[in-house]
Image (cartoon, rainbow, N blue to C red; front, side, top):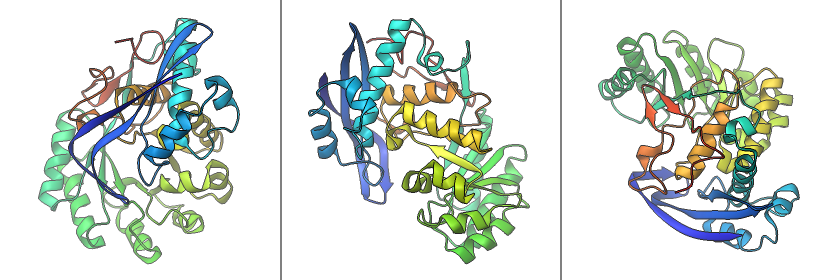
Length: 334
């Protein structure tokens, strides 16, 4: 197994709970499975996965890629497991002569997946203008970041978006910023502008609080909460209407697909997003989404967050959807 380190500069800094990131560092992983080469990507993100150093140590300690992902050797190191498992899946799909999404069990022919646009913090006018540009570009859904301002200020922003974009699917992402009382008021207030769901309204630990928020016209989506508790706990506690599946944080495209399938079995929706990954991992996330029937708009339009990439974009976004690679495996060889 070959492991090659890379660093990709961001087009604009990424603010995380662990600090501001100006580049995405990770590893390309190349494996041989029964004579066929596969390539994966391990790009850890502080606060979501293991550290870069722990990821590298885990990758360089893998005796055999297939055994590593079928056993527990990479438990607790999701980015490392993502890299190895994607490389193995790539090799197996190539050997089978089919695109990865079909190898995962997806439909015979899936050309595009709908994607959402993300709008950051700003005044009501700025937020509405950004959402309007996204809708003009064909995006079927817009996710607005909330929680940095007061609830009333965020409500003004969401109402402004709805007035500017009457037909778009409107989502909000609080990143766990609200307390219970704020969330309860928020869910009541967000019904009139027809917000589809709020992503991570409360802190990840509070599954019971998320369960209590459900039942109205505004849904609950879990992101960090899914990662912290796992899909079985989310299902058992009735804590979500939607789960947000990040393959890099969940330990691989295969692991994320198991989560998405389990969620759907329980009557929940599942959407796929990236952690601002390079082209190899981003393509894997697109294949994952393409393998899910009737998937909603996913957070896959993230390639523009990188000033440089591992490959020319193999899954370009156009008119509110992302192209699904149709060659053998994950992406064509360079």
